[in-house]
Image (cartoon, rainbow, N blue to C red; front, side, top):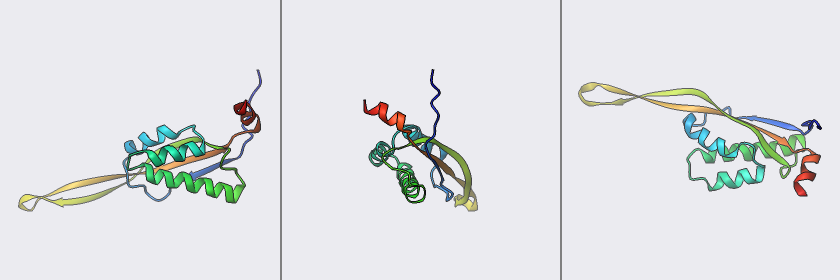
Length: 129
């Protein structure tokens, strides 16, 4: 058996700014795009009806443009090799209630990490056959 070495280039992108959506909502979208090609990912994210899909769309688009500009990575040959969602800070607010009481509101936020990788030439030739 041949060992397929992943000699393609790799670009990591981390959404350092806090994405204002919960982890479970972002994971629902990330699970759909993991392992797909860049063009297919953009199409899926554009057509998804979820709130979390737009920030992830912008993140993937920005990652591909940065990879193209900085590392000469071809967008058409790239795919999402790794995508993960991690917990971030929690915004705590107080909502006024009856008789001077207050009720805490917790808004969770998340960090999103996406790794774009270029398909190797041998994999591209096999997919065209």
